[in-house]
Length: 149
Image (spheres, one colour):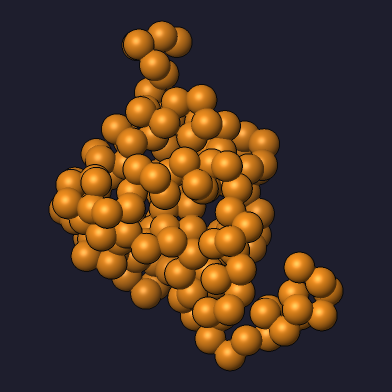
């Protein structure tokens, strides 16, 4: 994508063009998760990917459960002010945000899906006013394969 077309995409009115570009240029981890979420494969729930929400674009959204799934590629323990502000804004809009590391997705997709399935049950049963807004609660430790570690 050229610089000019990227700038035009970033400046689109509702973020739809930029979200479309992100879908085309998704990471290996995003593509893998999408193969598991699409077509209502998890608990029969519909997920969308690269969805514009306000000034942000979320990786995956389940509107029925008000759940957002974000994949992060950085090092463990790395949380930026941007991520924190974004998560606060999404929480204020009534969404529960969960984050998984790209390397967990690539090395243990079954553990990620198990954690996500449990989260879907949790997300629908605990209102935001009872602690759903705490950033530490949203970074999930993915169970290791075969009960190792």
